[in-house]
Length: 167
Length: 350
Image (cartoon, rainbow over all chains, first blue to last red; front, side, top):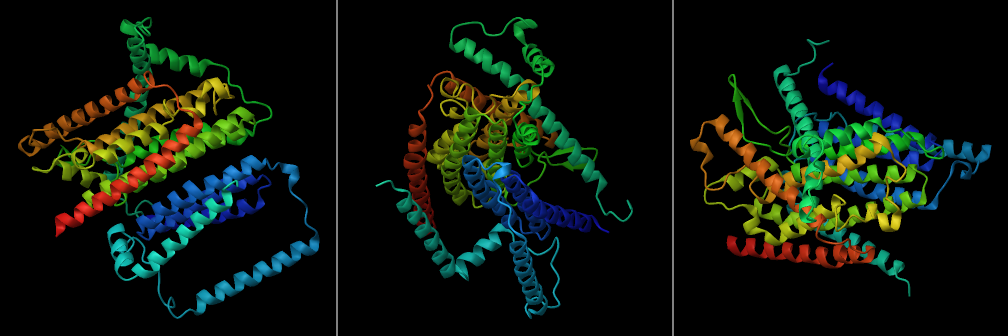
């Protein structure tokens, strides 16, 4: 096993364990913290793929901003351990089945997709993830979708301000 | 196993030593910053400051450290114990992690090996600094929440919202700088500023520097933006329930943050390890590297003094004033600066 492989397995295990802990934690604050650990592990995977920009932006946006807001809300709502309502058995069964169906569809999609069939991830090579190349692609080939999505963000921001206004 | 691991052990050891040196240097400097803070306060308030432990009181930080370590460790009964311990650790970790991308000096040559005095000159250096800063908020938030105390929680929420608000203005002011440098690599940014005929970035981006400086004060929770620890309204802030070395970690991480943000400001705007009016390439590499480290340290000390000077001069902002300044003044100003920079660059390219 090379060092890259060891890091890959470590990060994968970390991501899976943390993701499971998000679900199994009784305390919502713990769940949020485990979710942050998942983001760190995924950023580690991005770095292995030499997508440094994606890795760092994942940390800034998800771990650094969105999860802070999650934590804000959960801390202010003061959800304590006893608050969690117990779902009945049928609900749990329905959840398991629908979740399993989704997993099956995703796996079959990935397996059958012609675009990724027979390709493997380029570990430690490839420079499309570096910031200069990414910027060139985004602002040349994909400039219209990029700008449209930024308008989408703007409308979301204005919407939030309008809803948040008191009068 | 070791034969299968293709690791450049020489590089590995070199980096490990560099990391150890930088971390211990940061801790040592932070230690003496607490002393400098009290001395500066003394001078500004026309009193001697600490002068009992050793000549001029230079052993004061060790006495303080010993006091913090020897104090009784109190973990409140109703606190969330695991997170209560995690909080100060995270604050310290995030404070120390930033120093990985700062170029501390030019290359050293020891026994035929060229050693870059920077742990990692990554492609996204500036963004890395932002990522670590934004993760640093968790130390405050987790500590404040886990204490299970209303004052701590309020202070933690204040701290987090302040950090998020000012990160925005900081990022926008940085975009203008990055537009002129064209790279996010901190090592490359310093080299550009060292090039003959090229001034320091402060000459091209004075407004961005001003915004960055104000935001750095807010990010470090320093007066006039030390609302998370406003003792007159919150008793003592997010670390109210902490005692002993856990409190010490919180206080210490603030000083390390100050040190690192001074280093970042010196690197981005004041030429990093560049000595003005000196052509480093004429000196032998090792001498040039040492001179560079000293120059960088001098710049950092100046900024640290500025932090302290402001602390003992300017009173604390009110919370609504803080938010108004951040969102309604600094963000539009940074946006305008960005637009002007872009326009000027376009005009120069024509």
